[in-house]
Image 1 (cartoon, helix red, strand yellow):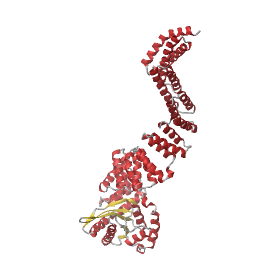
Image 2 (cartoon, one colour):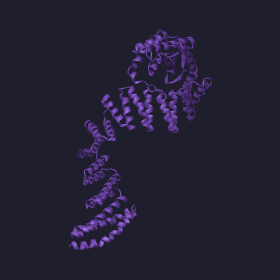
Image 3 (cartoon, rainbow, N blue to C red):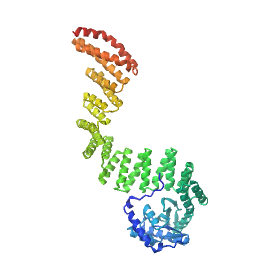
Image 4 (tube, rainbow, N blue to C red):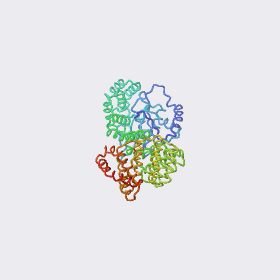
Length: 566
């Protein structure tokens, strides 16, 4: 997982560039920002989130005021409200609404504020409550959760936040040293800097996150886990710690803890599209697509009409085998983006309908795909399969032939064609299909198994019907199977089928005084004797019984030939 993410939420992605360009102009023109260089670092306090827009504005200004009172300008400069508002207005943003995370980061960068605050202010029965986090502008995933502040007056709560900001900033010099060391691959130096800073401030999570990075660089997995777990315990929304935990537990093959870390990571920032995508991909790699479904469902609901997210959801729903959901998402995906209606889309759509046991709809979906992509071999195959499953056998037969004509080496096409021919009782055609497939390089072992099944089915039919035609059909397939790949199964069934033909032909030859039947019996017993010994390797008792019985028929057959074949 990556730790240097900069995520731009969909709802602001299109206007983000406007913020950058116009805010930059506003920044250059702002006299308040033209500092002499003798002042301290800058911190930005934007409008806080609140159900009451006016309260969010008031809380931000109260924190600015309190922070200015508690600090010296040589140590810290609070970006004035006017400069923030000028940049927002120039970019077409309202000044009374809290910014999306990525926009807050962009604005902080433009007004040269290395840190900024994000927070929520609520009115309580006894006053006001402010929950906030100090964020580093260079990496919006790195922040320090501040103690919840409450007061009967807004200024009281704001004063507590201001003090917490001052306290949290004490870790920043050491964090800067650690960050630079890690960036240069000097991990031991990074560890030393982080440990030194944490000695006086063990809850400094921005600095602790850098220590995690340094340990990771040194491949000290257990130390990474220990520090990341400590961060997570005090700050459940700390995505740096959660990403590292997921990585480490994946390395240790601890699936339970990895899943817990991923779940917490998704919950930490549910509006962060890139983060959720990363979590979804991890679930997919772990074959846990079902757990990703709620995440992509929420993403799609919160960002309607986003083609990229719809495509992600489409893949996730299919992987999770949530076929009704996949079909709904797929329909919306191609409605929003007609280019998404690819050959692969139609094939997957048909597959989803098949999985739901709706062959008619699968056939319709595949047919639409073939109409749009007539030369796509995979889609042609899906269309033929859908036609077969919907009971449209003659149409499936023609479609399967087209698949093979388009690609004579398509093994799936041959297998489907043979299956359709079987359903139509076109047994001679099956033999021709399998022979053609072998000549075109299709795996002979797979063809042998298909021929063996046909032979076995025909033998069973012969046992039930006592019809020599069924046994003769069995012999044809079993001989082909044995030619493709010799097997004890094929040889035993071939010998058993031949014995059954010989037995019935012997009886009928005597009744009908037929030379032809007598010779048929002789040839059948010869075929049985040639194959039963090899079949006996797998079926010793059965083969032995048949081989013992054959000599009992030989005198009668010889006599019939002598009498009837003159």
